[in-house]
Image (cartoon, rainbow, N blue to C red; front, side, top):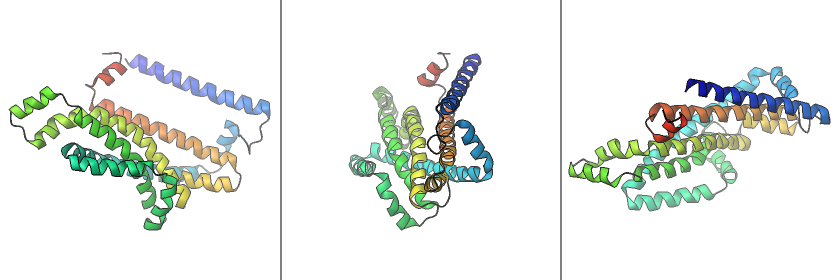
Length: 259
């Protein structure tokens, strides 16, 4: 199992190296101007000009993303429990979430800046708004997808609603919740960047906006590469948490060769 994991990582790194080498070769061969499409070497050189600047803004975006994502998980799970517990709550909450999810977030972002100012709060709120729908939808699906026989057995033993929720519904919902979390963490990152575009003075979105105004394409690509790395790491951290919390689930056994 460890050998398979090591082989997977080696294969991934090999693909990335080939991609970077091919990118560098194509840019050099085509003599593409850096203002249009910089080579990886130019992007790396741009990063080395001011590593603290890029890392400081990356940490700001990371904090905003994690705060919005954490709030989305906590609030979304609570809303999912309410949806499963009450038909009225289901109609009200789902209708509100569908309406909010259908609105373009870029259009709503200026309102959050007006309401909350230009600090970190509107960025967290936008990240929360983008991430919460996936959490609620998948968590509610998991909470409902319970074996009727198990539910009937709990009723025979006179289990309370709280016991059914904690001992049956929540463990059953964990796989679906983690599916939603893996989607939501990427949405939270997008929300943080949208907030920084609209009313930010820090973060990788702000870096991109300032670099775009100066036609500094290598700097834009530095921010994009950092965002790509951040999103990838966050996704795999959620996946690692999933393996740690629900190693018994069939999806985790299958990913480890059925062992």
